[in-house]
Length: 242
Image 1 (cartoon, rainbow, N blue to C red):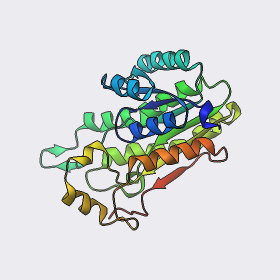
Image 2: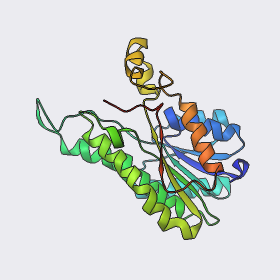
Image 3: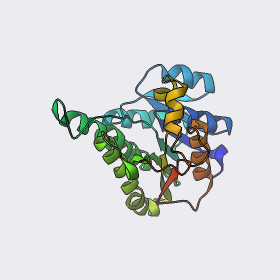
Image 4: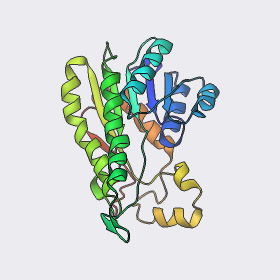
């Protein structure tokens, strides 16, 4: 797909991986609408020349309204990138008893159900084909202690890629997932160099945290490479979590 003809929505597009992706697409000449729960995302959208819709990805009505707005503003839709998500750290059984069910459900709801919700509603608007990119994680394969909810949600994303791609093939829509390793997102930036070095020590090469711009570059490549479909790409410096 010609990147200048891209009309994309990016969830979580005002921070972290999503923010880097919206910038990369806008810099390349794509039309972009940021979907984010934080209304401050409107300021970033205005800064880069994108549209903004305050959106709760788990709410059907909210997403329907946001997609209708995006289609109207951009004159169509052919790309959806799901970056909205949360991370939880909670043991299956901890000092205070079993894992809270509501926090497990909330993580699945936002990370997995939210991605599918946006993907299915966006696909219905892609009259001339398109691409959907979901964000998994290496936790889908190497989940650590305290990551039951997060790893399950991201494993769901990896499992979604192929059947969703098969479902949407007749519509000319490709579906891919990216599984990032440990990236320098706002959640990690404030932890300091010592923590960053500790997190990077198990990365095979290069021995550093990932740059969100690298996620954005891969997303852009997936959009442009029409033969990429139905799978998950690890973006992790060959990191295998201990």
